[in-house]
Image (cartoon, rainbow, N blue to C red; front, side, top):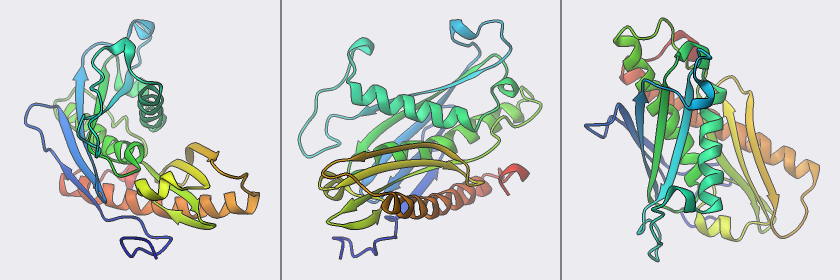
Amino acid sequence: MRKDNRPADAPREVRIIADQLDYADASALIEMGRTRVMVAATIEEKVPHFLKGKRKGWVTAEYAMLPRSTKVRSQRERAPGRISGRTQEIQRLIGRSLRAVTDLHALGERQIIIDCDVLQADGGTRSAAINGGCVALALALKKLMDKGALDEMPLKNLAGAISVGIVEGEVLLDLDYKEDSNAETDMNVVATDTGQLVEIQASAEQRPFRKDEFQELMQMAETGIQELIRLQKAVLKEKSMLFMAYA
């Protein structure tokens, strides 16, 4: 039995609260168990230099763990050119995941920056950031539509993410920090509301894993992601944002 009495195939308790910040163009606070991530979206009426004149937009992300998000204080990553490899890898994953479900041509020549700050970490911070980031992105795009700046909704699908792993020979969904630290196999999966895959990150930590174990991990992850996307839809519906594309 897991420490929070969850079955192997059960996610942690998840809560997403929209519009938590007064000054961001859109925001969402997501809690997955004891992991908490604040996500803020910023709309910029410009694009990176490599997209100038190409009549398409860009969605990017920045990720940071606050110094006391863990039991021991970590150093704040202040200089943009000196962030850790882990931070770079996670924020690139978030950006790729959100761009995969966005029609960048429909966005026009503007950029949306998704800032993901980990308030408290207990495993699965990258998954939480993607789930919260998708909600914040949808809210920011809805704001542009309400202003008449967009003719159509660029977000064509919702994206969800969750971790799975093998711990002491058992396949588990949504690993907390202790489970993740002891996992024999660690895997993160990103997929859409239509079941299409966006990214799979899988690593054998202690032993190689078999193809049948991979299939079991994938099946469990896909079920968990659809549950998270149902929660995203519920949050967006409260904001009168349940577009036909997400039905």
